[in-house]
Image (cartoon, rainbow, N blue to C red; front, side):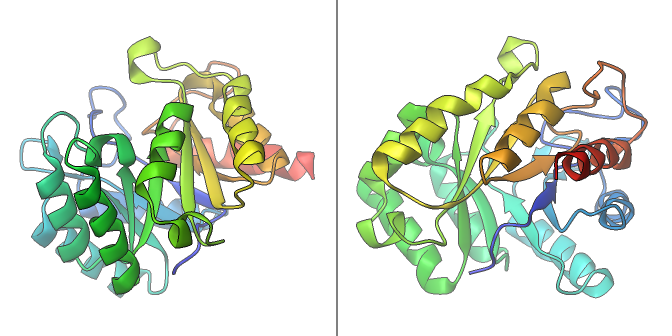
Length: 256
């Protein structure tokens, strides 16, 4: 399995457009250019969201395959993770199909969303991904999601060191704000379960940098970019994704 990058770029997400920020990349070519700029600053992986012709969230195996070909040609060996996020549009059957048929070797998936189907179906999907060498990063919005994952994932996958998790701090629904303290329940859950996964954090709003630093201090990794925050820690608006990466890298360097 491809391990999680230390700093994964999430440059656009599923909902935002250039009306939210003119430097938000939306086409595969724009995402590629943004990723290349951020790689020079220390980013070592991409969390990929695609859009349709109208700029709306798109989960399509063929479109993903084309985008992955673009990245493999221009950025060979650079890890690219596709999203399976539903955004209220796609059902679990479609999400599973895209994950298994896009040619991606890294996908992110919400256990909460997938478990809208029978748990046995979700468990079989996770096993299928494992057998195909597809690394699934499980999106956990709260400890209830974490507990759900322990009931759905086979024990061998749950306890494997290559288990990949991402803890989401903050929400769109609460003004796109987060607090580093929101990581504490997840860390307590890890302690209680005795699990030692490959984990990362994403965080909304101006709290993104402080929250990601908290993750690094606790042994985790980072997902940074306009998907979750267009603001620096002081509340000012970043000029582009590279500026957000630069602030994080500088803060991590000072932390070390």
